[in-house]
Image 1 (cartoon, rainbow, N blue to C red):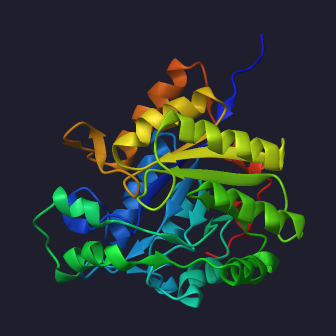
Image 2: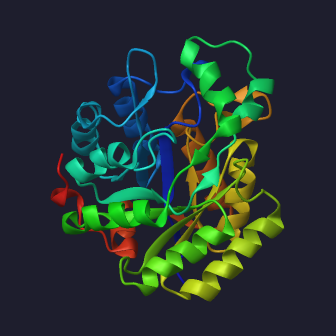
Length: 310
């Protein structure tokens, strides 16, 4: 009998999409981020995707010193693969967004594969009370926001990190982003196997219909053949349904409080670990096996946890 297919679970522990007031369970301080990440790894997360927050007011920050307040603790406490954002927040400069990955030299960094309208303002219909003044403005201002990721920006990140041996989680919010990735593959600036994170459900990107997911898969198959690892990110309430559909179609999965604050209809998830345990139940119900960190290192050809800069 063939062994079960191994599925990488990426857990996006905290991020720039959701504001702290939306959930009391969203980790904000370095200690909270470290504790949440370690618990997610203990629950079965293979990869930990990490943003940082200003501990004073929860604003997204790309200050490498804030990252250094939790990265060593995570490395010492888990064997999980660490994935640092280069997305940061849409209004940051590309130089600012790059610094944590450039200085900390993780095994994996995220990389957005195209510019897009990035509409967060629909959240204002669901949330009316905010702890910090910047939070409401952050959502309202997304009515007039283009998340800039030009070809020059993408090439800058790729070439700046090339000497570090950092590989990338290529975040593709629409079909055109797959073609952008193919462009950089053709130029030799990225090397297979590609780790393609298909993102569904952000206003401005591709939708959440199963046909959207299948269109992403067909296009990626045509462009990359067998030289990529596919992963599914469903935003909000689409997190588990799309991850389940994707896993059944051969994908890896991404969950976590960056992408969804919920564990079910009207119920806030109490932790990232809770979401990891939920998706593990789904995968095991599909007779799939959760990949260990060393499995992911082999599948993605990573440099290893001893070669990072933290």
